[in-house]
Length: 303
Length: 217
Image (cartoon, rainbow over all chains, first blue to last red; front, side, top):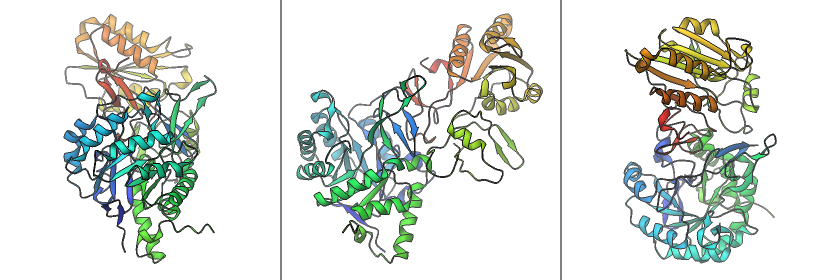
């Protein structure tokens, strides 16, 4: 049985990854699971300088989901390299660093800094954050800006480059194509959907930041549809994510067109979720006599 | 962290303090407040739920020469209950609630403490008013021992803030158990942070118990 998949030139031992922001810097889960059994660890999003994040409440539960507005709190790239990378280097699992910036220049500088760090196997760009130079509009919702920021990062790194797409767009397939044309090696589909919840007694938003990103099983059908659409538009591999909590969900994304999958909110509910998903996937392959997980990608029969 | 039902709605586990160890397991004490605790209350004997813990840091044990003063507001009693037990009769407890029928386990608690002061908002039991006023009077009237006091508190945020202020004004060390919306309990989601003098800290990992002067009230 072959579980190996390729994200650009990066070989993963299996297609199970963690979604950025739901797995800390890896160490938080090491007492629950064997990190070596993960295809890749995608760490909490990093910026050049540390970021304090948003006031509380930062999270609110919604039907089969949750809204979060953590505000990209992180320790900054330098502290990450110094304090977290030595731990991650002990494992054979691939380490993918998620990062973002306030400007295109910051993205490029961050990519350049991460490019030569021992033990970093790939980069994932979060483009669902605000652009300081364009009135804080979102990088990932304007195709021209998406093109420019991915191009700028591509020039600074030869590591496998994943662009994590925002679902808060009209045509995600077109955005995926923009990322591919600008040099992305893969796309992650999808980031959280922007949402809001209101307390009807106080009439105040339930999140201090008013809006937040919706994740969890509630968004899964949207995410599956988007993976399916992106698959028709690009040749580069897709990392499918959005509400995966069990092996059936993961397989659904793969059949829709994903080469690998990332597990996010499920880690909060069950710290061993990734392992159970991997085991369930192997079981499915045995029962259905699938030799190579790659042969399942994009096999949805939508005729 | 305790699951409140099977399935994905509600999605997240709930954070509870461990109330009591029994011969065949652990007990949590909770107030039915929202959907999660309501579902939990409908569980039947023999139903199973996932549980993750213990998590975070506990109340620090006082030294031999310190006098522990424990403050509980409402359901906050659940958090300090095992601590009172561990203090083996050394603690003075200040326990406040909205009314007398929300003062729980009083007979048992009295046996566990050196002294117990009760207050209720409606005056139906103990002193009418807030428990922090009662605490304040106590700390003022027994000044001789004030350098030996160490305060521990769990309850609603306004009470905790008032306890912190009262302790600070008398130069008494206070440990406060904080609460925030929590998703994972593992330090990963960064949802349950509180603002401290050293930036945001996680209630589930660096807390829930903090030194009161650490908190940016």
